Length: 129
Image (cartoon, rainbow, N blue to C red; front, side):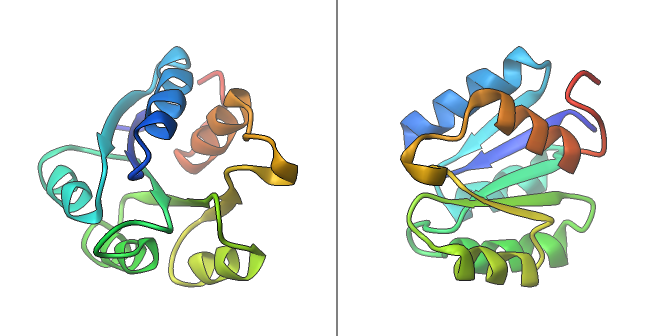
């Protein structure tokens, strides 16, 4: 279970790119385009880390983080956003995310090796584990 990740983001291209990076580092990856899909996946799959976009349709990422922390306490949450500023990332940490990062720090996408490092750390291991 330590290498299982659920990517929750309504941007299919973002999910695909992060999935490719994580699978190259031997992670088992699931995807969800909404909070509702994520909850359904968490109910049936063993997941160690949830990568949660804060700007989701219907139920926002902040509320999803609260649900994950309450219903699935063994799941570590990494929050991310392409639009929110640092204040919102801090709120994400306050509601239960262990890590909160911007998708595009300084205007460029976060590199694949950085996603691997962040998810590995949240899963409780090193990037080479």
